[in-house]
Length: 419
Image (cartoon, rainbow, N blue to C red; front, top):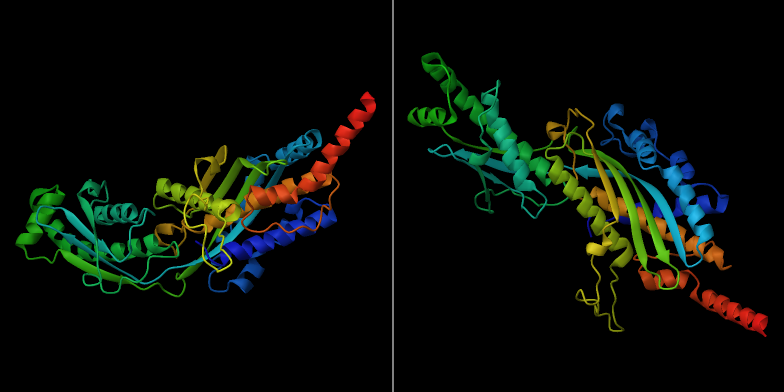
């Protein structure tokens, strides 16, 4: 699973907080906000990753999410709904996110061919996370610095090749959501080397003929025997090797007490992306990891037989997220928090951290179950809602045996009244 350890640990903390809130008859967010890090405590827990005080955006994000999602109004509506509906119950929950990520060393190479096309190689593997898209953009941006008044349109000239362990011998691993940043930083270094070589050629051509195009610049550099291939190996410094991501998510769900079916009515997320390298890519990563987290917390049962062999070995038995898993209303805001001097162009990771925010769905389901147990006279607290929490578990925890007794009593009362 993505975000190993962080997902489970954060979920455990949220379960504890919601239990405390239930026992004290308080809104869970009251307990959460009392337990938020101050910047001073953040430095104690994350001495190497906390960064500057201005970069600690969790309090702002949480308050903004509560406001923009109309949390208090919706929480009241959920209570009203539960008081008026016996067989369907709703729940709503809001969870914060602090997620530590680390940059790894990464190689990169940029080569300009005689026809002006640009070939790029990086150590990371494109697995759908938008790595190559960001690398292409970084290459065009970096080489475009030769035209400070308006860069040449270089993006369509850039082609990324999949490197192997012979072409780039220190590729490392593609993991931890920071591969795009590391590779882009390596490419930026390589491009800056090329700029240092091309700048004297460009200055000379400007003196002779004025405006200089990319094609003419590369043609002249080739004639002058300039090395048009540069390699770099990024090694993150101590101050930039790790940092913290922040975010918050609210989910509202509805359960069918008789069947245990779960409907995710709405989810709202605000996520601190620093200054996104590509907002479209990062938005897709945030949404995708959140949906994957829903699968982990709700649907994906890992079953084994008495011999320990996996029986949920296909999608006939193992329920991965599908089109029905997506919240009916899904709002995601990528927060641009501006300049971060130790980040790659002020960017932040977007792959794994949002998985943790899917615990808001699990917490909301627990709240809906709690309302059902209260309705039918079952013990409200404590009860254990495991991960995952599919409809069979939800139906059982709602107290189906109590529901059946309730229906029997209703039938008996109606029979007696008719007699």
